[in-house]
Image 1 (cartoon, one colour):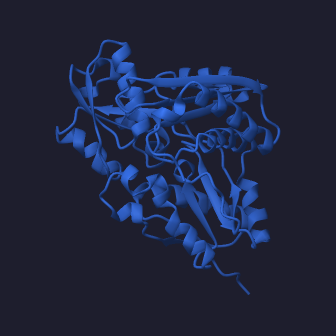
Image 2 (spheres, helix red, strand yellow):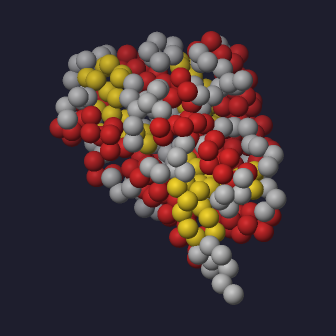
Length: 331
């Protein structure tokens, strides 16, 4: 008798469908079972309000989690940066596959890089984190830009540039890669310029905690290094008591490896590096004030140690005044 298809819950956007499709292929190969995509509309997909007004990127996750709890789907795929830091008891984060490029990118008119943008350039982004760092960088380099809050899917956002309504938009490199649109990128923004959102570039595969056999099968897709890196980043976010829409950037990386990746070294993944650097930033959206700190230590061997690393850096950032820069605080 043929086993029934595993039901994979996914948002309906082009990006969500692409990344869920990639996970579905991996699960089919892993388990030998058919996998069907179950499209779920979330409040974040239908609301036109800015994310900070409707509860941050967690609004993209709630409907998928409800479907898991109600046993309408067997597992779900999220962009990890959308996942609230609190993990419900009834669900388990079964796998965090190997992370894609965590950087932000610029798509600008006339092939411009960020440094080449004209005075007063209108740069679209829905992220207070990006606004804070882009404005801070512009201030420190004698540039004048205007960051414009936008919503919408990737096509909508790129369309603002193609129609001439904006000079540029800032998006995540990983999302563009997953839908085959990296050829439109005019500038890859160094993480020294803009730190990504905690967990950016990584996916989260979640299932019901009681489904131990499925959780064990999905765990084969887990990448241990990505898991401890994003755990450290999300721990920092949680310790700052900041929501997903707060202007917080964080990245845990292997310093020599990340530098090689930015240079395009084809052998970067072959390097063996034993230290991990965790960087965090909090800033006001206008970029007038930033608190940016980092710490380096041995690559954490456990999630517990990764969480401790994130908390330790958060304490230092709070001591430097980070709390006053975040606006809304998570409840």
